[in-house]
Image (cartoon, rainbow, N blue to C red; front, side, top):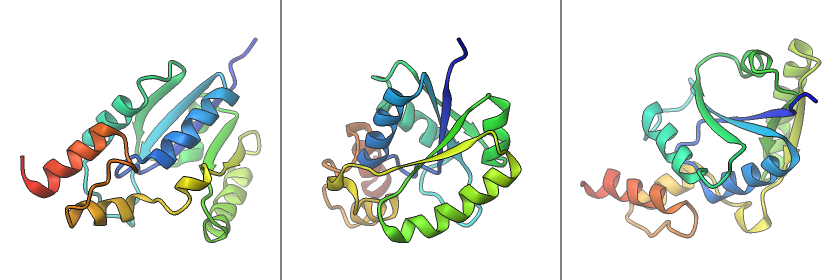
Length: 162
């Protein structure tokens, strides 16, 4: 029987507990989940690709069917290249849906065999996003309840010096 593979793309700058929640649930729905660290040309990242890869891998090491990779092209092309049946997208609020809906429709046009699956994080994470986490950390607020321990530590290093 063929494996059901899903991909979960994002910049993950940094990965948050909201991301982890979505990935953990996706890992129960699919045989394999590939977390794709992507480049968003509209964003300036705090962490480089290697740092984001390492933080995601450490944060997800407890999930045996999750792999973390880097990809710089179109998400839908990557999905096809690994035989993914689904692209996972996290939706926190109605404001996320409009943008994600447009992307999902374009992906369906480009690759009708790849389905977009929208997952909502646990309600305790709906207000979380990486930008808010970076801003809190920049002002030396404790972000440990919002991100995995390795991410909290790396944020402290970035903003407080090593």
